[in-house]
Every structure is written in structure tokens, then in C-alpha cells.
Image 1: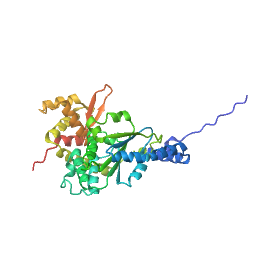
Image 2 (image 1 turned 30 degrees about the vertical axis):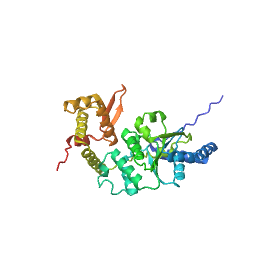
Image 3 (image 1 turned 180 degrees about the horizontal axis):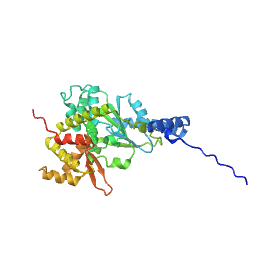
Image 4 (image 1 turned 90 degrees about the vertical axis):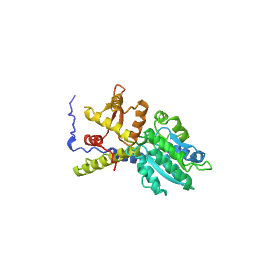
Length: 345
């Protein structure tokens, strides 16, 4: 037979434009909206029919936890609109790794009449004390409840035990004399297994979760959009950010108890000597003992939760299963931590 030449197509890779994650999410969402599956609408209607029962659970001192397959962000938004007839609504996105719970508490304080709370020192308090002051304020002065809607309570931004304890404490301290809570929590969770290890028995008791299965089978478009690609900053912007970060670290160190700051400085010294910038917990404990800082495993764990909450350290597990800690800042900033001296004037 006669051979035919196969046409080849050349692709100019150098000039090819690769879309960002946000652009991909937007394009896929537009395609999905153009071919909406009727099953999604049935699931949505079914969820709406359960809103009243969820609201009753909240009024009965329970917190509502939505779990199941698919993004539950849209369901949470619709439920928020339903609850807006009963009180105020505040949203918190746990999947955002930049969530700062202390700033969130301060925003609640300024937005709901607690501007004089703490006599100007509110932001220097621990998360638990902040949540206690806020909860008491709402219990005394509020007539309508505040609903906090947390999308992905098991997300990166809220995974620390201190953050979970503070949120549960916020609800508990808002209890009025008649037994009703002025702060009520609705949250979603994606990984049920991680959620079961996220709370201590006491914290889980304070939340008093009412588990509700909500499988929407929807994609995580909005969650993906949150992860916007960071452009390379200019040299000037970078230097400003580094200086601001150094100041923030200094403020946190000044707010810590002196011995707690010394323990972090021990880690900073070990990290500067380490070729991998990571230190095992056993190395850290041994170094503390040599510095006459006799912290046992339980005390170190408690301190680690505090440091993680203030974004002073990051915990990882290597291939052999060993836990390693690192101060997730530049080498210059780690040196600043090591040089830190408390102002006694």
C-alpha cells in the first residue's frame, strides 16, 4: 500500500503559558456551572431541610460538626444565612495556613464592643486568656448569640491544640446564668480520623459536638483559590517583610515567660549548628538539661504547642519516624532570637 506521511506538530514550550492553580479552579468551576448535575441540587435541598434541626442543636448547647465527602463550604454559607435571623455571623477559614487566631479574637473584641477589654494589653495575652475574656464579655453583654462558622476546623491554620482549646473555651465562657451560650460554633471537617485525634477529652467535652453527615460531593474550588501563588517580591518589599517579622518575633518572645524564651533560644543555638536546620526533640531536651532547664517530655510537649501556636517552630516527622523541630524563619532571624534579651527597664 501507499505510505502516507504522518504530520507532526511542534509545540513551542518556551512560549507556553501555564495557568495558575487559581485560574484552573476558576475554569473548572465555570465548566461545572455550565453542566450542573441535578443530584447536587437534591443534596442541597436535603441539607436545607435539616437546618432547623441543626439550629435547635446549637440552642441546646451543642456545637454542630459537619462531615462527609466533598466541600461543605457552600452548605456552611447557606446555613449561615439561615442563622442570621437569630444572631450575628462570623466566618473563619481553617484551610488558610495564615489564619491567626489571636488576630481573630482581637477582631471580635473590636467589632462587638470590647474595645476597652484588657486595658490595651489584650493582644499580649495567651489565647486561652483572650478567649476567656471574650466569652465572659459576650455572656454579660449580648442578648443575641454570635455564630462562628469554621470551614475546615482540621485545616492547617487551626491544627494546634492551643487553638482548639481556645475555641472550645471561647464557647464555654460565653454561658449565661440561664444556661444558654452566646457564642455558638458550627464547623466542618474533612478528615474524620484526624478530627478524632484533634481534641483532648476535655476539649471535646467543651465543644459538645453534634456530628452531622453532609456528603455534598462538590469540588474544593474555593479552598484551592485561597492558595494564590506568591509573586517574587522586590528586594525592598522583602527587606520590609523581614524587619516586620523580626519585630513580631521579638514581641512574642517578650510576652513569653523568661524560662520559656530560654528554651526556644536553646533550640535556636542547636539549629544554627545543625547542617539540616532541624533538631530532634531528644537533642533539644538534652541541651535544656545542660543549661539547667530541667524540662521533661510532658513539659516540652506543652511548650511546643505554645510555640507552634505563635508560629515560632514547625514540627515534622522524618522517614525513620523521628520527630524533628525547626524554627521556620531565616538564619538571620534565628540569630536574632538567640541574641534576644528581655527589656527590664
